Length: 308
Length: 253
Image (cartoon, rainbow over all chains, first blue to last red; front, side):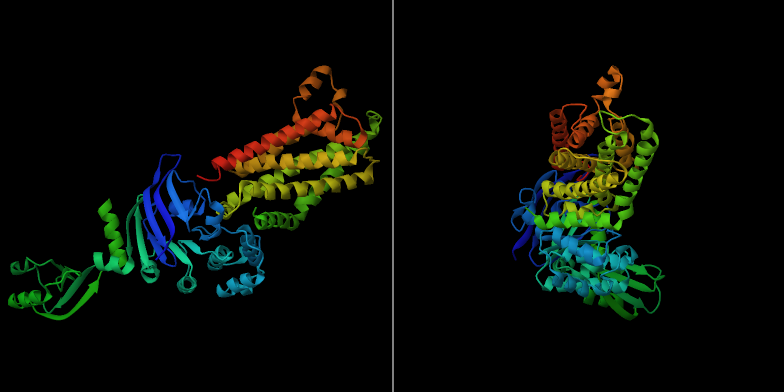
């Protein structure tokens, strides 16, 4: 797939001396949903800010559809829509006026039909003549998305798009994002909600302390780094694991009532059959069993923890 | 050139004026009318003519200039400061607009408001005193140049300010005193020689003098010097704004 954003050796050092980004290299593919994960202060918003033109880079280069963000800022910025993390709106403007303003600001001729379409898609049409200050937080978030989409961008940055919104709105937004992707828009989202990335993203990037730790296909990442656990619900609780089972990666849980076996999901031989035989030999009986795969959240926590 | 953006910002700023019509237009007109009543009718009746012009008519250019300077500065400073304060500046910084287009639209809107206000005050003056305009073209030139120049200054202040106190500091503590002491209500020829020399360091003297010349053909300093000084201020403020955008001063980290 063709790359639409190309980040090469990007660094950012603030006047205070804080190194927010350290030699970031990243390619975003056209038409994908890319989730950027990282703890607070990792550099997610700084990276987005530089690509969108809000912050100056200290070193490195960013190309958007082949246009340098510094020398070709007009071309690059006109392709980008940004929904920032903070709910920053013109409180005294109407929904219609503020969305129309954004379209003009990004160099597009007025197109009431397009604005109407966006507002309807985001369930904002009944509120088009309402002042923004009268809207709920969720509605304001929708207005910000409408503003970002007003000039028909090819790339949409969503910085923590569902922070502080209710479950229903979150589902609505996911639907909007999917529809946008289906129409060919490339989406880069940062989120604290791992399940959001797991649900939405094609690829995941993990950033920590200004460094891009990894970029992977979501499914490949989960397969590569994921571990599986077999939980055996024992018929009788154990006080300790029998010495004959010491070779296995076992742990007791639930006051000794559960025996947990952690194994590598990518391994050709998980060793479950031999474990069950050895359990039988050791006289450990179980009444039920289940397997679980580690979530993206587990992977993320482990990655960040390993770097500390 | 991103004309759609220029139009959008300009219309946005003018819409803000319409929403705050009382604060933007009516309040300055009321306060200027009070100046006419106090200085023109009450005190002015006890002051003889200045350079052959009745005192009430003499202060008209100064009063217009007073409003023009303060309103240009406050309109432009508020226009750019408010998006910084609310955080909506992100949209401006991420838009495909050049520094020139941003300045053109914000300063253009601020100057438009000030000029409209100046014309309303001029119309109001006709109700109180016999005003005449000897050089109408030059009057418009001075009006527009001054409005643009001080809107640029306001834009600089709006970018520099990081709180509302700083935003008000320059208009209240610097611009208003300089305007009062810049010959708005008197001819500097009426001052003792020492203070005449000191007054010449006040830039507002040149603006008021040139503007008054366009009305009555009388000036404290030569009109050419007034014009040159106005152009100089314009150039200086333009250079400061250009530097701010080039470096991202208080706009981009």
